Amino acid sequence: MKIHMESVNLSMLSDFYEFMMAGGYLKSGLYKKKAYFDMFFRAVPDNGGFAIAAGLEQAVRYIEQLKFTDENILFLRSKKLLDEEFLEYLKNFSFTGDIYAVPEGTPVFANTPMMTVCAPAIEAQLIETYVLLALNHQSLIATKANRIVRAAAGRTVLEFGSRRAQGAYGAVIGARAAYIGGCAGTSCTLTDELYGVPASGTMAHSWVQMFDTEYEAFKTYCELYPNNVVLLADTYNTLASGVPNAIRAFKEVLIPRGINEFAIRLDSGDISYLSKKARKMLDEAGLYSCKIVASNSLDEYLIRDLIMQGAAVDIFGVGERLITAKSDPVFGGVYKLVALENEAGEIVPKIKVSENIAKIPVPHFKKLYRLFDNESGMAIADELCVWDEVIDESKPHVIFDPNATWKTKTLVNFTAKELQVPVFRNGELVYNLPPLVQIRDYCTEQVGLLWDEMKRFEYPHRYYVDLSQKLWDIKEDLLKGKNT
Image (tube, rainbow, N blue to C red; front, side):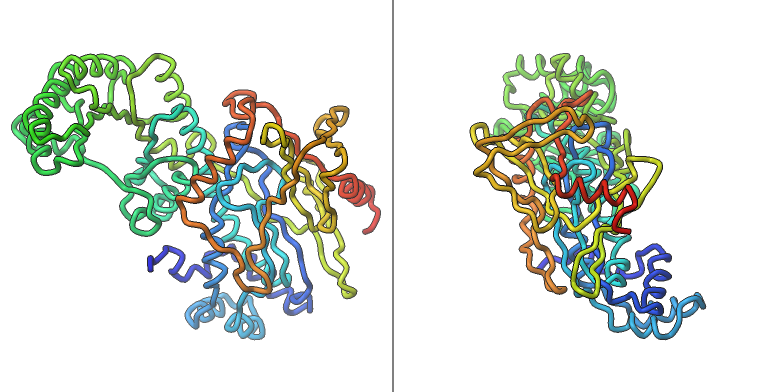
């Protein structure tokens, strides 16, 4: 059984104010009050058409193992702010609530809940920081990876970012998220060991420089690792020596052994020009099966431009701009209280009011539906409903764009699918966490159900995200000061 990074005790990976509020709930008698929190984000990174949900498995592992050790309690006591009753409570802490979440790999949209936590207030509060950390970070990287993979238009993309990631956790888990987004593999060995993301790699410029000649470096590598050869051709002069020496090594060492799978890598210079020249040289040498790998500060825009220019690149290795989501490095997910349960067991919606409309969340315990056209199979819209509502597929269904209330659409011949699935019930895990390769395949499938107009990098088509009439009325009443 594989050991995951989450097996380390991360209970104290929390904003300190979570402990302060939790302690306050205990002292004020609110700790058992059932609260409903939504985790959602307000804007898609890079002004894209959609994001990719990721990080659920790490949040699940954290919640399963959330325990406070004697050392944790001792440290919290040293802060001299939390009373002994609360510290005693933490000694026996375990999560007992319910969680619903969108499966990893699902395309998601702003202001729709990726996760809903229904639990005693004290428990829901204590898991907030890590839930946000896990879902924000991995959704950010999975979203960026998916953009890059789509830009590559069917060519292989590998994640090469470990050395530029924000710390060890960012490197390892970031590579996992990149795989969900569509990358075929990673350079990070630990991610392969822990999560099964295929790790690969051959040489750096230092290998070539270690030998007296470039040819000797290439020949030696081919002899040592004949079934895993990617020769770095740009250490000295790509076209004058790098590609010719690679061709010579391939022909003298690999071809006589019947090995026809190998590649060269270009890591500097004008990749478009060099790749086309290299491809011509390789083909003239009869090495039609030799692949060309390109790296060096790539992102979706550079890859798109290279392909438009006819670059002869088969595989892209993408590092710092993927693993850090450099162009827009914050996902912006938030965790907001949307309802409380009263003593009669009724769910009472709650709302946070702000002068900034974008910061007003959708209140209440909700269902999230995705509506699909039965003829094309494509996604038409998402709709948020109150938890007890059911969309009737047998009747025409009207949706509207909340950002343009005059724009309505009547749906017929459609299927409504609930996006959130039960993950925890009464503290017990009820969701079978799927294998990572299954998540990746699911992501590819679900992105394929979105119209191409939504996949544009500039000015993507805006997807309908509607509120049911019942939910709309509840929100309006709350904003007008009713039911307060």
